[in-house]
Image 1 (cartoon, rainbow, N blue to C red):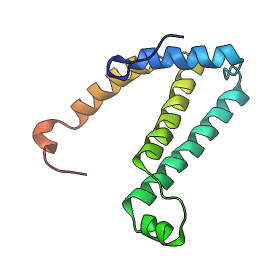
Image 2 (image 1 turned 180 degrees about the horizontal axis):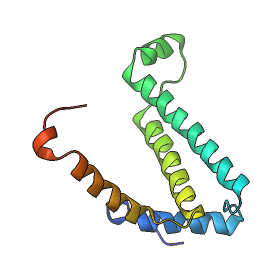
Image 3 (image 1 turned 120 degrees about the horizontal axis):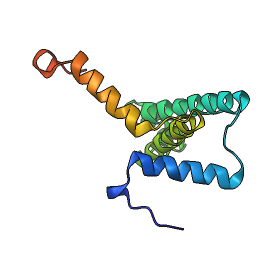
Image 4 (image 1 turned 90 degrees about the vertical axis):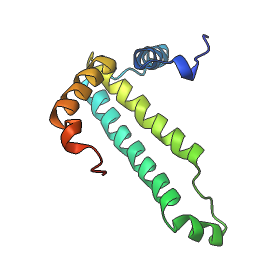
Length: 124
């Protein structure tokens, strides 16, 4: 198996890796039910991202520590974000979409919709 290097990894390569992983196992969502399940699973994973951020950004971590319970870490957040990314790539592939191309179109639309001259420094 080819070793992936994060500093040079492209979205297209990630999408190919996900496709290969799923095809090798016969897990590609090729019908409506499979694609629907993938959306539901992606939503579940996004909930885990929210939980992890809640632990990192609130007093919840302090409460968890006082109770002797596990506290979320940045590594766990990274894992949860990677799960969401995996499922987005899986969905894009299931519909025959190239996510890198979609991203290029989207960032161009966002730049036109929110020009720097009008929105610089607004902070969200």
